[in-house]
Length: 322
Image (cartoon, rainbow, N blue to C red):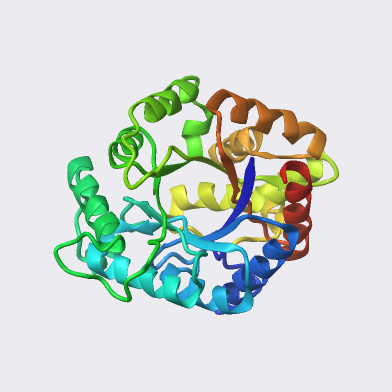
């Protein structure tokens, strides 16, 4: 089974936002040394806690500091873009870093209504999204009504960030899938993945490929790992109150807050389901999910306030699953 890493370019409360992209580059360099297969970055617009609005730009910088690890997006949010522009950006990345580029596509819109207004595009129906994904696929392969350039002898492989209808779309178009979030706790996840494989229609020799995206954090003890997970969980809880997804904070600062009963309950619920623990605790949990789905790859996506602890966790995840 392959192991890859997704980095969301998280900002931190004690550092300027402009430091975050450099941290992503440093993490990619370390991931390559640890033997991770891919390093993917995210797309979020006008979010205080994430400094990655343009995956192609960040990936170009990462490509100049690495030499082997595959580079991709988890993902480019297609409703924010025209298919031609997406294809051109990733064909250019492919020219700069030959044979190392992936394109992951999603259909999420901006985090808030003002951001969605600024982006200027409405939500796409599953059918509209499928048509635009097909356009990107064809443009990458040189099969579109126009030729996106620079043309590639071997186009970057395409993956969908998918649940529900997205799994069906990926199967119909012959694309790989990335599955993450609450669906990982679904009792029928294995059945959904099975339906994706059975319905898969190969395109240009493609085969089904399933990546499981988990916010994996490993520490010496379960308690230490839970503390690593706390900053990200608190950010999610705070976003439901303020409407903004904030920078990561020190766990001690979070613990010192006077949380409401509802906030405290949501934090505990998040910690209870987090993919955070010692190697002995996490290994059987991950193995059960991989066995139930027949996953080809795990895309680890953990983040925390302490960058040193995050680097140690990345190394522990690589040892655990690599």
